[in-house]
Amino acid sequence: MATDILASLNRLYDPKNLLDVVLVSLIFYGLLRLFRGTRAVQLLRGIVVIVLAAAVVSQTVQLTAFNWLLRNSTNVLLVALPVIFQPELRRALERVGRSTPFLTRHAEDTSVQRLISHVVKGVEQMAQRRHGALIVFEGATGLGEVTDSGIVLNAEVTAELLTTIFFPNTALHDGAVVVQGDHIYAAGCVLPLSQRELADNQMGTRHRAAIGVTEESDALSVVVSEETGTVSVARNGRILRIDSDRLRPILSEFYKT
Image 1 (cartoon, rainbow, N blue to C red):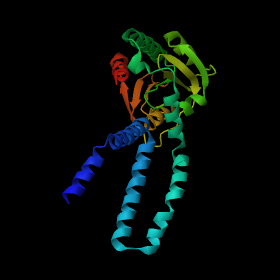
Image 2: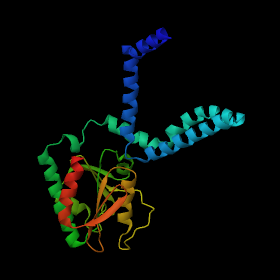
Image 3: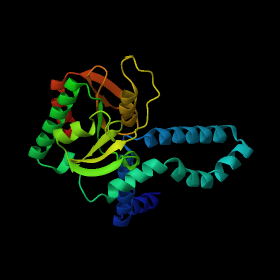
Image 4: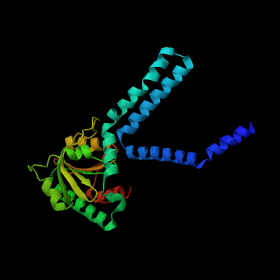
């Protein structure tokens, strides 16, 4: 008995086995970080719960046909998962393959403050003129599908450019602007619309789009209402009306996280 225990301990503390465990742990940790803030986490949680519940039931009740079905569903599940999580896998690969690091982690404070100053100035001007606007700030989750629907600009963020894009009747004013890093990556983008009921009747399609993109990513959205000129901020599927002077600290906090 003692010999078996010592042998097991030796195998456990074998450098190769330790390296094996560390590598597997790092892979799972990396996958969780890549999918963090996406719908994939919720879907995966649901699949795990269903599989575990089915396994417990089958082992407890000893259902022969059900056990056979579970065993033979493994290959089907392995093929189905990449299809189900295709958008999330695409965003994850985009993040891995990006050569430009995120502004939130690597840019200097002066660049961040300059960006925020131009955004706040542009939003205040559009709010005063009641020009509708929708600006999305990309977080850790890539917005490749969103930017693919718009026009790539790769332009420096300035208040003048923002007010020009959202000037009424221009070609891009109805879509969203996506800010990626320290530049406007694309404009005229189409966002997913939230299906939840809005408590405020004065909130329209722009507000639904602002909420929708934050339900599927960790982005932050800023909306200017063309009807009232009010400014709203959406994140994590929630939207809140704010005064324009509160926009600066909200953006500063976003770029610190």
